[in-house]
Image (tube, rainbow, N blue to C red):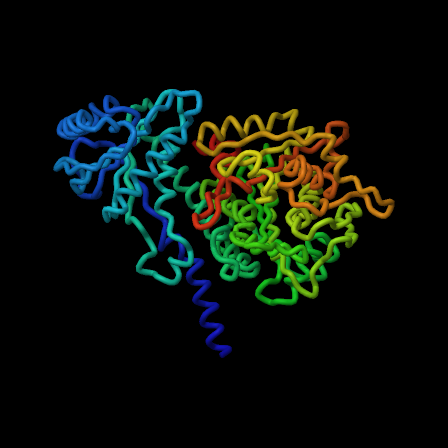
Amino acid sequence: MISQRLFLHSQRLSYSSMFYRRFLTDVNLVKNLSAPSKDYDALVIVATELDQIKEYVHNSVTKDLQTFSQLNKKFNKELTLMINDNVPGKRLIYSPTGKINRDYDDVRRFTDAASAGMKKALSLGAKAPLIASFGAKQYQQAHLVSLLSALDTTYVPLQIREDKPEKKTKVERLGFFIGQTSLDNNYNEKLINYARAIEMGRVVARDIGGTDPERMAPPRVAEYVENLFNKSSDVKINIIKDKNEFEKNYPLFAAVNRAANNIDRHQGQLIFLEYQGQGEINSTLLLVGKGVTYDTGGLDIKTGGGMTGMSYDKCGAANVAGFFKILSELKPKQFKAIGVMAVTRNNCGEESYATDEILKSRAGVRIRVGNTDAEGRLVMADPLCYIKELALKEINPQLFTIATLTGHAVRSYGESYTVVMDNGPARENRTAQKLQAIGEEIGDPFEISTIRREDFDFINDKSEVTDILQCNRRPSNAVDRGHQYPAAFLARASGLDKHGRDSEKPLSYTHLDIAGSAGKLPNMPTARPIPALCQMFIADRVL
């Protein structure tokens, strides 16, 4: 039995360390569409109108599409599949964006068109599709958006790659043609490498966030991340899994972790990541991600099927790992990043933390537990305090928490949007507005909420025994300002409220609630807001 367990452990390590070689699609810049290439077996055209493509494709392609457009009044609204001898594999797929200039249109029209075209190509059996991207002046990142969308369709879930090696890839290679652009080929190559690196990070985020709660239980998450960075000198990794250290330095995390700690395969892990680029550092990003691998609700147990999908409660931490994978690939200069993945499981058992318990945070704040199903803010508060301490010594620090934190965020803004909330210093820097603008450009949208005085009033405990209340007994979506006050809690519990605009040492802090944007079963996680974070902190350094 021991030798068998060692073999299985070794096999798992092999799977994790090899997953890029076995999965990630090669992406190549294609410079000519006019003649069919034997390297590819389908042509997918993403465009707003037929006139865009005339000078780039063989005459027969334009002629066939124009003829068909006269027969189909929905030609500009739906995908068209045709046979044409002058395109790769004779498979011609025209995937229009539809209208793009209405008040409610945005760059996601290109996301949808590229995704639809790629999915059709894959369904036809194409293994080497060529994407021809034709953008629009008002959407400067349309080509990048189309490529990221195409890459997204090629993802194969980790457990399929492990259990069915014959299905480890959907495509062998991907060609990408950029039409109607004044950009030179050198920039286009950089753009493709940039998109490919983002996809590497999204693969990591989906692997961790979207894999089931046993395969990605906390120790297995740590194992995966160790294998991911064990040969990289660019990302340093440190993992804490000792119960005593949790209790001493991360007491709120320790409380949530109690019921999981006595089960070896569920024991919590705090995973610390650090990247430091070459040159004199001029900006530092500090991230904390919620990594609850399964949320039962604890003693306030989820009922009525409410646990379904709770394995996705680790998507915040998964995104942190994915972002650091991108850093290790692109190696931006003069940039430093520190990340903490707070990974545990909110179990229900004899060791569970309980409502009415009084906990003392790393920052010395006394907290009364109001509901054990509000574990995410407890899991992140002490790591947030830790990076706050580091930030005081760093150059131009910006702190973020990323979490699938509240159902209220979904009720407020829907399932497609990340909710962004700034503290005072971040508001002065217009962090939320910058992220929202960048998100609009790259199809990774944000909605801005504001942390108000009522949110701080809400968490003030009426008892003289404690300082603040974790939450009340009701779920967030049944409480006024149910996604804003948890951000106030994180600021208070971590001591960040002492570093506001009135402080001698103000710190910029932004909370991202991805409960809506992270995705949900049966779909794979979206890995958002990784693209927007890359655009905000990395793009100008590598493109």
